[in-house]
Length: 52
Ligand SMILES: Cc1cc2nc3c(=O)[nH]c(=O)nc-3n(C[C@H](O)[C@H](O)[C@H](O)COP(=O)(O)OP(=O)(O)OC[C@H]3O[C@@H](n4cnc5c(N)ncnc54)[C@H](O)[C@@H]3O)c2cc1C
Image 1 (cartoon, rainbow, N blue to C red):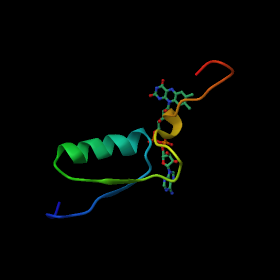
Image 2: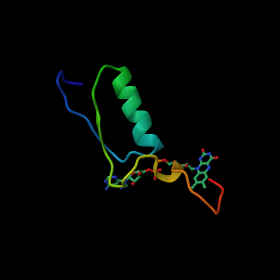
Image 3: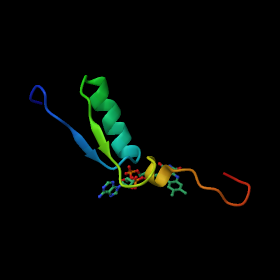
């Protein structure tokens, strides 16, 4: 990876967040580009009645 490279990750689901964490642990500063109002994707919490 060239020094000063900028990293964009499309999607803030589990895959995108895992990638971001790995890049961050390698000393890089990735940017997650997420189209939804919140991250987590399919792993987002959902409510059915009073259950979450
Ligand atoms: C009810 C349920 C139960 C599950 N249980 C399990 C389980 O027990 N064990 C297990 O291993 N897995 C389980 N899964 C599956 C697991 O949740 C998914 O496989 C995992 O969350 C997928 O993550 P992902 O990052 O690959 O994709 P996603 O979660 O789909 O994330 C993709 C993200 O990218 C964003 N995105 C898409 N297109 C764009 C774009 N063009 N620009 C910007 N952002 C974009 C989306 O908004 C989303 O946030 C379950 C799923 C569900 C729905």
